[in-house]
Image (cartoon, rainbow, N blue to C red; front, side, top):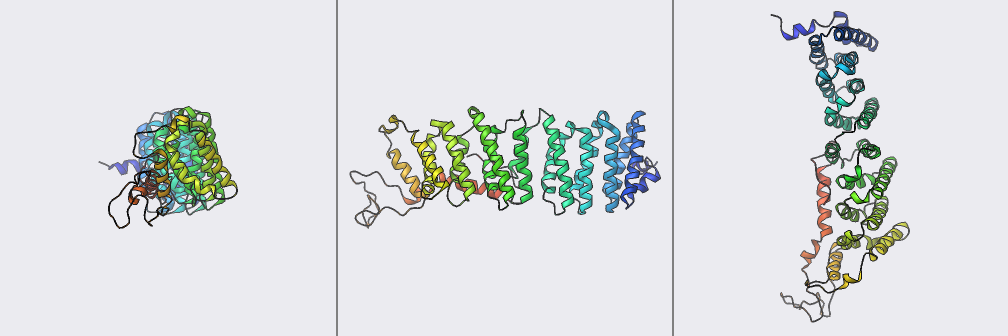
Length: 428
């Protein structure tokens, strides 16, 4: 009894087998055309078991070969088979066609990686929407190939990327929640090409009418602001444009926007030290948030103050934008906000403590050289008649803004490198 391999190899003619294994491109193409005609005949005769054998031998005897030319031939053969099957018949064979091509995305030979892009392009062009079953694997592969060391591979990945975006735009049931998980695990990459790739997908999906990206902005806004700080001007411009598009989306759908989930993140990015572009953009976003969110952002006033007060001491554009944010916050305050409360600390005292601790200001000096309300040389805390209780410095430093900043830095660490990390939740 012949083995499965012997049975499968007999499906291909000698000329097709030799042609696909040839080192010359033209001979491989000629063999692929011959294979396409053969598979079309099988489809007309409903010989789908024979087609399965063809796909089997292309995967196992070609794409897994130690010879790079043979692997290229296998990829060309799989694409030819997909074209021959056509849209009506490709569905039942799609997993067997796609999986071996995806495996070749990691091939050590750059030309094989390029052929893998070309092969999956042809398969996807025939299959269209059904190929989205493999969207996770394709997206991960494209993210890696977008930063490939070989320019031809990057070009092939770019062509495939455009096609995938076309397919997604045609599908009203695209799983945006699944995409956000993929994006979130890669948004903190430091690779320039991968950053361009990710930002292009954010911008693209924001332009698709059936996808509501404004509902998911809290998941990736911190990472997008980090990309805005990239050293390359073209990436800065791309991130800046995308942030502008998202802000317009927020203004159009403000009723469905989770302002509270992003305000602290914006306050952190408006601080001095993150870069002028990041600061300026964050201040613009804060001003818009205060305009749209209004009183729902009252709880974030102290965090915003911590960030913008140093900016107000600067000159130029940053100063003007910080002043605009400050003026808008003043309008949030109503007369009833000044009423007495039963808490130990007045609201202003709480804000002052948070601001001074976050800015790491030295303790205020009393007449005796110590902190107000503390007797020098004594370990106890005494309240003077007209003073508020004094919090220990260690407690003051653990301000809400400082805690959230530490959390964001930890999340950024999870997503570093080319491959990204786990799936951190970015809104705090």
